[in-house]
Image (cartoon, rainbow, N blue to C red; front, side, top):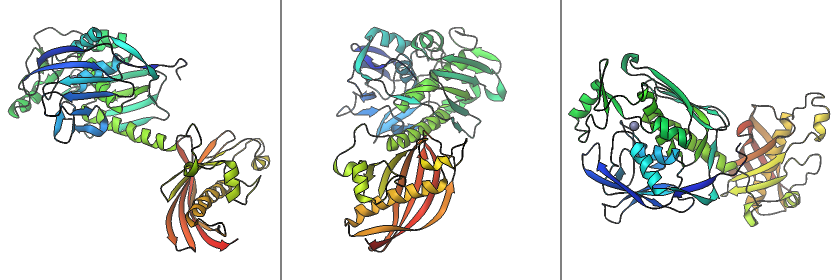
Amino acid sequence: MASTPEFQHTVGKTASLSGTSLHTGEKVSLKLHPAPVDHGIKFKRKDLQDEPTIDARIENLKTVERATTIGEGSVRVHTVEHVLAALSAMGVDNVIVEMDANEPPIGDGSAQPYVELIKKAGVTVQEEPQKFFDVREPIHVESKTGGLLILLADERFRISCTQAGPNNRFTQFLSMEVTPTVFEREIAPARTFVFYEDVQSLMDKNLIKGGSLENAIVVRGEAVLSKEPLRFTDEFVRHKILDIIGDLALVGRRIRGHVVAVKPGHATNAELVRALAREQTRRSAMAVPRAMPAGNGGLDTDEVMQILPHRYPFLMVDRIIGFEGENKITGIKSITINEPFFQGHFPGHPVMPGVMQVEAMAQVASILLFKLTKTSSRVGYFMSADQVKFRKPVFPGDTIFIHAELTRARGNRMAKTKCHCVVNDAVVSEGELMFTFLDK
Ligand SMILES: [Zn+2]
């Protein structure tokens, strides 16, 4: 991945912009304020009592009907995607977006006014490294309306987008790497567009009070209606890319990956963000801590060997990373080519025997049981295994994360655990193991 460390950025100073909000037609002024490292992008409602702030994070996503709305409690901020796109693409990680209404000014329907605002405020580097989401395996989401988003591994942030209107009118395609320069020149000026058949229903619902040909392009049949001529022949797909960048900012991390989008929309974009957030949670849950936690946090090899009677070559856990509550434990085992079983399993094609993974699960689970029983006079004996599945081969060089969870315990006599082994974020084996307790 990136060889030079990349640092977080905020705005250099406060800068402000005013205009009209699209959906309510109210006057609104928006200010960008500098914010400290790891703050993220937060919206502040200056017009409300106590001036509540809302994190621009997927957890706060409320609605995606034509625009992206975030909120907490009863507080809402509508149509955040254009300002988020500009902040994200121009490299601003930490900022307070203060507003005196529930929606940013629509401007000309593009992100250009926000790019100018960010340039007015300046972008300054901070002392903490940026947080990235690196794509390891393809992730895809699909909507009922035909939207499709696929995220592929890439060292850069790229978007390849196909946009198609009703009956595939105005089908357009564009592919690019998103950098501040490219965004400012190729994407930010692209304006919001609507198909006439869609706006009619919005007008009926009174959803676009501030809407006019000054802040949106209206397509009626084959005719393109706007105050100013098209800024690009493929302006629509460019605006779709703008919206994707804005919605993906809700991940709260910079994405290193290639987004392949077909007929994207806010709902599909939000689904992708949710998928990334789930993946991020999963990764954080099994990241190896930098230092071994003291006390109950984890156990080093010596401590493991004080509990388990097993020794080389049969000790199948290097250390315990940590416990989660009373019922969960995670251990790790690094598999090297020097493991004795590779001698015979198989010469020229070394694969870790599945039964050794079951043994690793049993050892980690018995450490959990040892902690539960809190006595060294009784020891858990591995009694039976059920539902064992081997899903992927384990090779020399792999590090196995061994997870065990206590699912049933009957007094001090027997216990049932659910276990799985993970390599490179994929489950390689799993099983339900039963133990009985006996005096040593
Ligand atoms: Zn938009």
